[in-house]
Image (cartoon, rainbow, N blue to C red; front, side):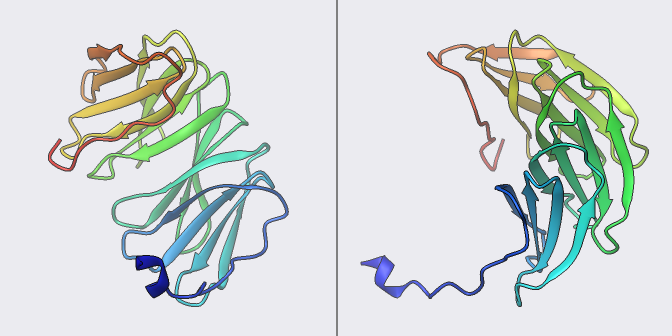
Length: 197
């Protein structure tokens, strides 16, 4: 069996004081970001398991974390209704993305790193300019919590998953809903594009 060939646990990353809700690797594989209900994000060296920085600033639980494609930024989504963008190298908060009226459950970078999508319990997805923190557009149409968002590989589309049992496909440039996928019988909690889009 394949399991017999698996390596032992390389390291246990300890330091959070509450549940760890999400993890993400940097694009080069050298860092791991962990989001926690202890209201912090921690950045760890993957090779050694050492914590290199603790990102503090949110005022409520953090539910999602993502690296930008170039690995220079970390985005965190929180129940304090904000997304924060942090510099991975220094742990400095570059900007706080404010505008949602309820918990933010998911965050994703566009493939070129220029946009950030945030999915919220306020039934919207917001697209933000990563460089400035400005809200580029608000995607309205879901009738319940939006639990996940993802960019297509070419960055042209955003998919959103909702507790209204649908997935919506949006044009990233215009914010127009291109289609609504309605075949689920329960909440939709995750969404992803195929590699070729």
